[in-house]
Length: 236
Image (cartoon, rainbow, N blue to C red; front, side, top):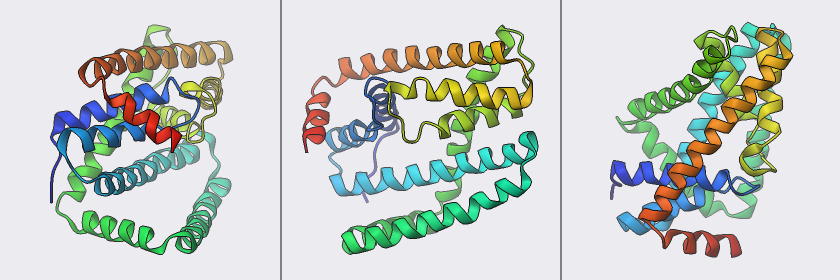
């Protein structure tokens, strides 16, 4: 099986961040796929399946952090317990819809997921995904210290998971407004300082925008022809 270089994967993630912060809809995975296809000559279908499976794993871990934090910090054991059966029902419904649309496409995903699940690399991949969310939470944790907002690292991990989870179906570049609203709400569940909470949410999101633009411009400079691929995929 062909493999992508680590540097290519990192550049793809940078491009994904940039696109998600300049466009109102979340299509950052388009350039991520394009980079891997273009730089490593890996088949488009294989890269697409890999990205989708990784996104699925991403959301499972993010959902776990958000769910656990809701129980600990919001004391919503009963309501949180309902999330799992509701989410499971939604996944099952989506499964049957996709099965009717294109069973061969779904079968390929199933085979790809099965291959990853049985691979000895599955555990290291999961650990890296968990570590990536921990690293992202460091931004919020350090920002909180700068404005003297009382926030522990575990609280920062939960708040960040809630804020990112609220952007799954973003309708503005980078999830502007949604991100701040969800993060401020989560912060006030921990400590009821509304003004500080909203200021912290704004500062954290601004930092992420700046970071996304800087790495995005780097990718643009490194692979100028990539955006032709993105425009073609959008048109399609």
